Length: 382
Image: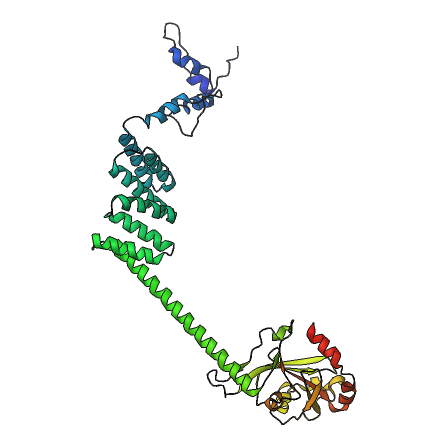
């Protein structure tokens, strides 16, 4: 006859032999259950519990767990609050700050009449919130402690740290200095106060520097406007300036001297080939000849292109656009500011930059005949 297979669990089960005692009645129900079922039952008993199970396995409440919970609220109010405080302290030591806060809060909810216990609960909860970076909650708890005990040094220290963390520097300094009047040798409090004072000095220095820079900027702007006014120079701003000119600026070589040379960008346009050059900065005393010499300093291959065959400093003619949309020819050896300072016809800077058209002598008459003032003014308005 083949021996019946037995699992390891069956081999370990207690099966009474003839003459041996049977299992006690309270254990009989476990005899027919698997190991997993037994462990599930045991997990509902608070002593064996490894995970929180608030049920009885049949959809009801875990009576054993509820009974254990109720024990936490047995005793006098101060005893209950003290118990919650001790549990909170255990979690604080283990750095379980969130859980510690919950226990301290439960202790405060008891509303016992022992000031020392309540102050300890507030103070300890403040310590947890400081670690959790819940600075405003920490400050509120410390305030409650100080209202009941104005000489509580720990409340001064913790609120000072929290106030410093949220950049309420004046308040942090005030509470820390007050705490040091109670305990003048408190080194941690001194260290936080030193950080507060250093931060205040840094902020003040930054503020003063920005104020100086702003005043200097305003002064430079005023001097620049005065220099432009004395020169009778005009600037016309476009609604949509060319990308190269979006950040274009006019400046003085010496920002503090309105008589020093004005410096600005220049757009050198070649309308017959639909090309241009951009020069970042030129001085007002620059001549068209000097400007052309700079932009036409090109490799030989540039001039070998048929469209550039007539391009040379000597052969190019220069024109500036007027406020009214017309053109005037300028001498190539005359400083640009002489043209810009004339009252009539008025030649403005466009978007803070000089706009100079350069055309080969052989093509200038044809190009000028096609210039349309109305079209130019209409384009400016766009």
